[in-house]
Image (cartoon, rainbow over all chains, first blue to last red; front, side):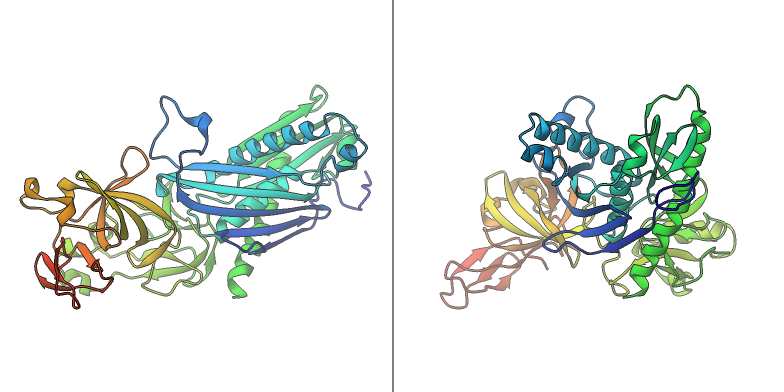
Length: 241
Length: 220
């Protein structure tokens, strides 16, 4: 199958990662570019856990000495045209999507952090999706993990992510928004390559015709490829100093 | 045999070698499924425990646990650790400040209360923290002896710089600190006139201008 941008079916988009793009108090930050999906992630903290953090996590069985991860995703440009034309519910839809992405990012990143080494602290990840052309959660996850690594937070592993889509029984890795729109099923997963651990899976669509397992394996393979790229970028940040 | 060459850049998650067979885990590394794994981005430092460590009192070395493990196999294993970029050798092994029990900290006294002194913790060891943590020194943790005769008001004043040790992470917001050791206590204090005071006796400080004496729990 020929893809619009000339990639092979299992080929990811070109990745560009750069560190320290946000000034003003951030412990670490990164800019990630995956063709036309662009994100900025900044990491704040670890700061002392405040009273206002994560109200919903309080209750029985909550570890008082535990670490908290506060992930915020911002989509400043999404639904802008819809809001301008006066469409009702555009901003609520955007807020809902920001919340969902925030939760997904937290779920993907939290297992990679050595929480026991950061007791009674709160770590804040602010992610702004500047431009989205499909797979924005994957871009956010990879960029957040990169930013965490450059800020010196103790981690168990790097997290990489990829999205797959089924377009007419054909598997497509790292789809663009146009490919996603015409796909029957899609799946996103976050994976820690050195540990071989899947942190997060999100699948939707019609999976009756295709094998879920095969797609999962293809996703894991794509994550492993992405890991090599992220590692290369990380090593480069140290050596250029 | 360590898998990664000395001073090579490693990323979180990279395997460094088999635990207790090739090397032992040092700063910024952890052990997972029998392998020593890097926890942070940085350059690998491979240290052969020197013979000097043998002569020292076991209690005084920080690497006691690692050296004894190496001794069991007859040959000393190298300690692998990761030096974060930017940090100099021997200084602040952990760049990210999170406090744990036993850490020595520098704090500034904020307010007093007959039961405890509240402080802002601003340094861990000699390296500054990103954000100040809250800590309290309870009256029973001010000194080691005659703890029932201690008065907070005659041990600290607001604005004093105190060296203390973290003894507990506490239940709510504040960490619990202790100054119940000789080298812990007030390092720097100002008198009511705003002059830096000098120590004149184990428990008293003198204002050089007004010659007024004030009581403190002074670090010796």
